[in-house]
Length: 127
Image (tube, rainbow, N blue to C red; front, side, top):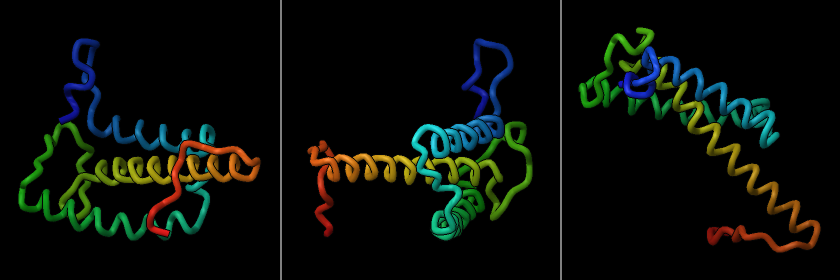
């Protein structure tokens, strides 16, 4: 899987390396760019525990039934519920980036509202 990312410029970048880079990048975005600091909050980890439970369930089904197959040369080797641990890293990065982005947009809208400015964000229709 991860071989195509680095073609033409030396050794290919492995799935494992990309997973670690994704986590580090998202942590930088959360802590330094958006400054939402989600990963420092208990509520984030409680919500993430729910997400990772279902991620492991689906990974177990998809990889256990061999719907998704990984090149063993591209992963570290350890698996949880049949899926490589790298999938947990990518899942963490995806969920964390989504939640941090959402929190940053909401903070921007709330700050603008307090200052009496209109923003382009719309109120949720589910309220």
